[in-house]
Image (cartoon, rainbow, N blue to C red):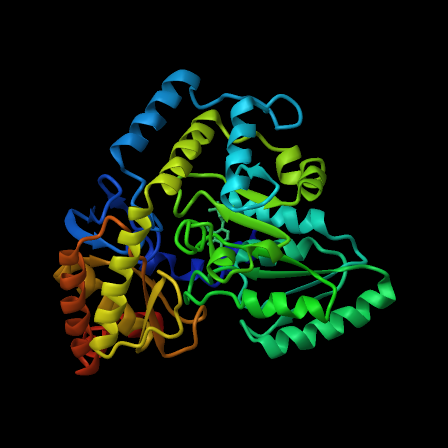
Length: 419
Ligand SMILES: Cc1ncc(COP(=O)(O)O)c(C=O)c1O
């Protein structure tokens, strides 16, 4: 018989196998100093484009003060226990009420982490007779929620309305057999490529097909819509989103998340969300911090305006220089270049060490072979100078990529990787 760990000793997994070459630099990098537009990486100052602190709240003095005071008042344990048992407070309720009002839903419920919350909301909303229809490029938390589902599921081509309709037809036929209903799940904004989910088109399909729409709006909340209420507000269909989800990990610059829906649905979820029934409640520090952040989202529209001013300056500047930003319709700014993985590694080293620009890098197998995706997240705390320096840096690295320099200097890396 084989030892359980044999496979682990042999194979570290699709990402883990690169650990000895990538760890500490390309993955698990340590950004140091206060969260801001410029931080330190391995002792160098870098312009940071890899943090989802869209509204620049993470290090605002008034936020730090509220966080510190809440920690002083409550410590990090309070309240102990799951919401249902001993982890419920007036402030949890107040935050839920304010979140529900902000996203224009009857009720909301807090989740102690977005990922687990999404997984268990999907799980709670369906029985084995129900059918799930979802985007093939969905975030891992959606995919993992669907993995728990014991009934049928259909994926549609990424953000493709024709494919959505085709799969709704299949799902409707199946649901007629099983006697179940249909849950359609989309993201509000797809975090890797930046497209908005086709919510308006999906909602229009409700006239022909009977389904409920669940939207993960992690990247839309706080960044899109007139008031910042997200992608549904942006596209004028918030009232047609049956279950709305957003995390505190992006615009709110914190930890935690919430779902919002009609009161009856939230009342059901309160008693059926296993991730909240069997796990500790969101700590008071985070609840009080989220109340403060939400207040700033509501009362300081200039933060979102600044975010978009920076987003437009960065995206227009890159486009004017001929960079391919794909199909983004949000602040997420992907830059697609052609090159191999070793070239991508040399390019990122150059970008960080010689140009002082730090952004995320994505390569095969997440995107097709031969493509390099540099992903930039503009925030309200970036400056025009950050943008100007980054544009100059991007032109320089593209030239170095195209004249073959990275290929030459990465030959040793390529050999070491057996490419
Ligand atoms: C689209 C999407 N959904 C859900 C999550 C998970 O949220 P959390 O970080 O709160 O677990 C993320 C990442 O933060 C995300 O990008």
